[in-house]
Image (cartoon, helix red, strand yellow):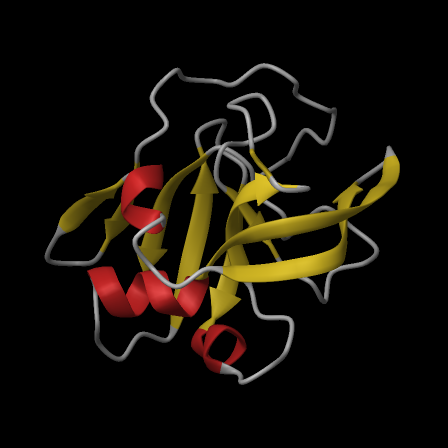
Length: 147
């Protein structure tokens, strides 16, 4: 599969709801539902864009991928595919989202103290360990497929 890494400023769909998908179910999740989970902050974070450099630093706030999975689809999962509404996707292993770290993988819904706009992603996967490529930062999340 070939991925287009050109910047995409236009949301592919107006619907901000995403789904957590398991072999047995498909649960919708909204930003309002995420706001009911414990908030985590990631100061001094960057958005990495392949071929377009790095921007930031930003202060992101949201919920950990771990907390979302445990709230919506508890169980023993090997990995999660995080899929954008524009078709871009990345995979995160359970070892990564379960790791106890000061900078966990985050589903961010705020940037620099304000809600993210739909154009900014509204809900955006932030993988703090990624510093070189944009292969793991997903905006416009439409699905989290648990494997």
